Every structure is written in structure tokens, then in C-alpha cells.
Amino acid sequence: MLFTSLEFLLLFLPVVLVVALRLRGQPLLRWITATSVVFYAFAGHWWFIVPMLVTTAVDYLVALGIAPRPAGRGRGWLLAVSLAGNLGMLAYFKYSGLLVHTAERAAEALGLAGGSFGWFEVVLPAGISFYTFQTLSYIIDVWRGAAPAERNFIRFAAFVSFFPHLVAGPLTRHHQLIPQLARIAERGIAARWQEGTFLFCVGLSKKVLIADRLGNLVDPLLAPTAPLDLVHAWLALLGYAFQIYFDFSGYSDMAIGLGRLFGIELPQNFNSPYKAVSPRDFWRRWHMTLSFWLRDYLYISLGGNRCPPARRRFNIMATMVLGGLWHGASWTFAAWGAWHGLLLLVHGELPWWDRLGTTVRRNLTFLFVTLGWVFFRSSDFGRAAAWFAALAGAHGVRTWSSQTGMLLALVVVCFTIVRVSPNSLELPLGSLRALPQAGLAVATVAALLLMNYGSRFLYFQF
Image (cartoon, rainbow, N blue to C red; front, top):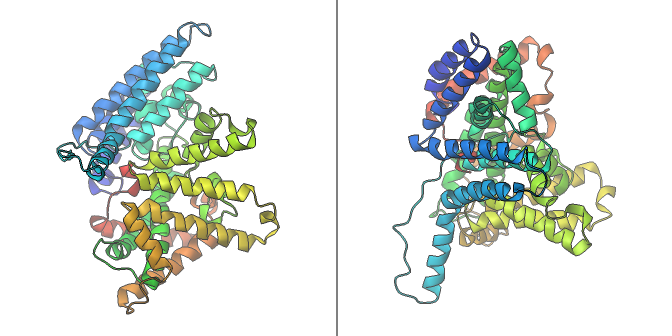
């Protein structure tokens, strides 16, 4: 079940909201948890709920075991149980295929017979990377003494499974969501209808009217059989850069909007990332909840900025490579993370960067970030190399087509939007005039009409 599906918009969401608005206390939390589990069961295979429920139960019990123990008395073992369980489950479902494929390629390179593992295939549960990181942050904070253990199991289960953010974020910390769940259970839901509906419709329009239209034009250019020339290579790259932005930021807007319908404020995930003036600034604006998670639970744990320069550079690169692998089980994702690690390191060694004009820094940052999407979009290094070669003009220039013109026009429109327009959360929701409201209504109707031709959100695969 997708946010953009008619069964979600016309059946699931109205029923869940109508009932939730009549409930308080534990019945409300049970309803939110139960309907979130149902939503997740219809997000893919029904058995996806099993690893999520196991993670929820184990981390609930581990936190209760950690909280009352004095430092050093078995707390480390309990933390290890949670880390092993969460990371082990994530490794099996997400990375076992990569390891098997790598072993298969190594066996072929060594000329070993029987190196094929074609029978081995693991289905990746939607959103497992998100809820695993969410419960890990909770357990680590309880272990550090930075958070109390949640004793109400239903409230903790609602924290993990709350359907607006379950499948593709935003990654939500315990202090951002559990107190809000406690508040709505006590006082009932104070729905923020105007804000929630507005943000949901903005996100729906981003996804269906922009991201999916770009995907329809970009995907044929990047098909394995399609040779890329100079013009189409750059148009495909720019098109994909805007496709993934409008797809993921559209989902985040929809999730935040849905949260507000339940009286819940989910954290901001995007802050105009293509307006960034440096690689560091980009990561303060792109997928913000993941960036802060990697900083707080990985980079700082490795030593952060407190280390000698060589170790600090290693910490940055390790964090970014692992962040790349979080996105997908492919070495090209690791290369994408390494690319951004390199950008951060080089930027840190350029004292003259900040003396450049804002427009120059913004354009250079956009260029280097966009080049990195080659690794992100390519399924292997061979295709990435071919794409880079085409970007350099290795295959000349091909005949212009009507599809090329459509993609160019859409890229220009998208570039204008991301550079000139405020982001969704910067819009003055309480003072919207009739014209923007009418424009949004038209865009929403168009999006609804085109939903049947849409696709899954790109970040569902992560």
C-alpha cells in the first residue's frame, strides 16, 4: 500500500483517522499500532511484519534490562544483544546477497568451479533500514543514560511502527515521538487539518507530477541497451538528480503532513539541499535525519573531531562509506558514499572556498553532488564508467528528439523551483492566498488522475 494509492487515500486513511479521533489512552495507541502493522503488511509481503515485531519486542526488553543496572554490570552485554540482533537482521536481509554475489565474482575470477550461488535470494523488507536505525538510536541512548527506558510496550510499538514514517522515514528519535504519543493518548488527537492536508498535497504533487514524469523520461535513457551521448548523458544525470529529490522530499512532505493530521510533528528531512553552498552544507540539508544519526551514533563514536587529523579524515570517510552502504547493498553505493567523503575532505582543505561568491559556491556544490548520483543510479561500475565517459563526450552527440526537448524543459523547470522557491516547510501555511490554494488544488487533482501511472517511492528499496 502506497501513500499515492486510492485504497490508502479513500479507505485506509479515512477509517484510521475517523476512529482515532474518537479514542484516547491505551485504546488510541493500540489502534495506531494495529493499523500501522496492517499498513506495513500491505506495503509488500505480509511477513515483513515479523522482523519488525521481533525488533520491537527485543529492543523493548533490552532497554528495560539496561536502564536499572549500574554502569559496567551487564549493560554492555545487553547492548551487544541489541546491536547483534538489529545489525545481524539488517545484514542478513540487506547485505547477504551482496556478500554472496561478491564471493561468486571472486570465485569466477579465480577460475573456481561451482562458484554460482544463483539459488540464493533474500527479499528485502521495506523500510528495514529505517526502523532498525530508529530502535538502535533508542537503545544506545538508554545505554548512555541519555533517555529513560519506555515501560509502556504499546507506546513503544507505536513509536517504532507509526505508519507515516515507517517505510521511508523521517528517522525519528525517541524524544521526538514518544512524548507526543503520550500527549495524544492523554488529551486526544488535536489534528492540524490545514497544515497536514497542505503538506500531503504538496508531497503528492512532487511525487506524481514531477518525480514520476522525470522517471518516465530518464529511465529509457539509462536502459542497459541505450548508448548515451554527451547531451543525453547530462540530461539524464540532471533529470535523475531532480527525480530523486522530488521523489524523496515528496514522500517526506507526505509523511510530515500525515503526522500533523494525527497531531504529531515529525522532524524535517529536507531543507532546500540544492541551495547548499558546500558539501558540508549539503549534508545539513539532505536527508537531515539520517545525517544527524550518522553524526551522533557513528562519526562521534569513532572519535569525531577529537582525533588527530589523519584519524579524523578516516572517521569522515568511514562514516560516509557506511552511510552509502546504508542506502543499498551494492559497491556502487559504497562508492557514492566515498565520493561524498572525498568532497567533505577536499572542502575542508580549501580555505579560499568561503571567499567565493555564493552563486559560484552553490553551483559548484550542485555540480559535484550531481556527479555523485552517477554511482547512486548505476547498478555496477561498468555502467557508471560508461556514463562518466558519455558525460565527457566519448560518444559524441546524437540526434535531438521530442523526448529530449521534454526532458530539457522539465529539468529547467525543476532547477528554477529548487533554486528560487522556498521549501515546503518554509511556506506560510496560515496565510496562503486563494491563488496558491487554487494552484495546489489543480495540481492535486492532476496528481490524483495520474496516480495509476506512478511508481513506488525510490527510497522504499532502502
